[in-house]
Image (cartoon, rainbow over all chains, first blue to last red):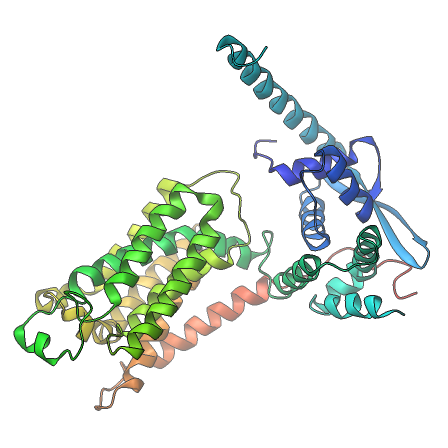
Length: 109
Length: 318
C-alpha cells in the first residue's frame, strides 16, 4: 500500500486484527487500542467502513439480530491484513528510530 | 419504541433511502449500543455527526464520490484564487482613485472607500494559513467566510460596504475548502494547488486583457463586476477549452473542480446585469452559459449519488 494511512483508519483496521467485530465492537476496540484517546462517533465510523469496504480492505462477515438490534460483522480482507501489517511495521520503524534519537540526546533513559 | 429509539430513527432519515435500506438498521443498532454505554444518553455530538454524515451521503459529498473528490481538488486552488482575487481587489478595488471618488464616498474605512480591504486581507492571510496548517483548513476557510459575512453587514450598516458581487465571488471560491470531505490528505499537493489556482487566475485575467488599460486604482470596485459580465464570452471560451482538455485526458475530478470553481464567475457574470438600475444588457451568451454550467453541476451531483452495491440485510426492517 503506497497511500499513507490516517490514524483513525489505522485504529479501525487494528481493531479488526484479532477477528471480526460489529459496529459498536469496533468503536469499543478503537477506544481500547488507542488507550482511550480516540472515540469514534457512529456516523464517522460508518463513513470509514464504507470507504474501507470500497477500497477492499474490509468486508462484511455475517450478521445477526440480538435483542432486536441488527449487528453486521466486519473482518479484514487479505489486502487489509497486508496493509495493516505494512503500516504497523512502518510505524514501529519510525517509533524505534525516534526513541533511539531521543536516547542519543539523553532525553530518554 | 422509546423516545430515544424514535429520535435515532428520525436522525437516520437524513440518509438517502438506498443507504438506509443497506445500513439503516445496523447504524441504528450501533447508535443505540453507544447510547446504552453512555447510560442511555444520546449525546448531541453523536446526533450532529449522524445528521452531517447523512447529508454528506445524500448530496454525494463523501471522500469516495466524484463531487467529494472534485471538492477536494477545488479546495486549495479555490483559496489561492480567492487570495489572488483579494489581492487584485486590494490593489484596484477600494483606493479612491480621484478626488471625485473620494468626495462621493460618504463614509470611509481608513484610506479606503469600503471595508473591503479588511475582507481581502482575511482571504490572503487565510490562504497562507491554510497551506501552513492543512488540517485546520476547513476551519480557516469557515472563518474567512464568517468574517467576510460579518464585515459585509458592518459595512452595510456604516455605509462602507464593499462590492457585494465581488465579495460573493470571494466567499464562493472559499466554499469548496469548507465543504471538502477529505480533511487529512494522504499526500500534500502544495505546488499543484498553488499552480492550479494561479493558472485559474491567469486564465481569467487573460480575458480582461483588452480592459487592462482602463484599470487604475479603485476602478475595479466600480467597474470590476461589469468587466466580468462584459467579458463572459471570453471567460466561457477559456472554461470550454479547459473542459475539453480535461475531458480528453479523462481527469474527471479536475473537470468537476473546474465546474465548481467556475460557478461563482459564471453565475455573477450572468446575474449582475439584472441588478443594475440602468439598462445594461446581458451578454448574448448569458443564457447558454448558465444553462451549460447548471447542466455540468447537475451531472456532477448526479454522478455522485449514493449507489450502494451491497444488498440490504436479510433482517432489515424486522
